[in-house]
Image (cartoon, rainbow, N blue to C red; front, side):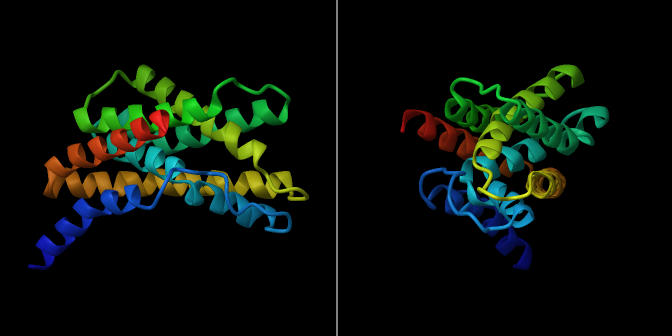
Length: 196
């Protein structure tokens, strides 16, 4: 009975996330929010960031061991690269579209449980997160410490990636079909963001 309740809760969690409203990583970063706190909260306050990071973490469990274990670090590296480019004055065109596409494609990767060669998978993860890093950099609160903000959003990124991996490991052994359902829901959210 308890196991069934957990399965149902896991199955319904993505629906709750989708019903929370439009994806937005751009709220709650007023001046004075503090660099570290603002950095920690930014990936958690935007549904697009949450969905992409957790889906990538889930997907990484089905990849080769050499890729799977480094995916959270690759995600953090992509964020750092995107933020560094923005802080250096290089802004990529279509950042919001890139973020929405990263949600859509990470959902599709998870829904299909596709296994990719490690190099291609690594490039995709970094590319997806470069767009998220750009958004994070642009929305750093006025007066926040750059290093504290950076540390905050890198810690949150690593944590969300590890959380996705932990869920993925639990689902792979107990409820393998749920991975596909979660992936389909994440892809749907990304598609809705692109069309909206």
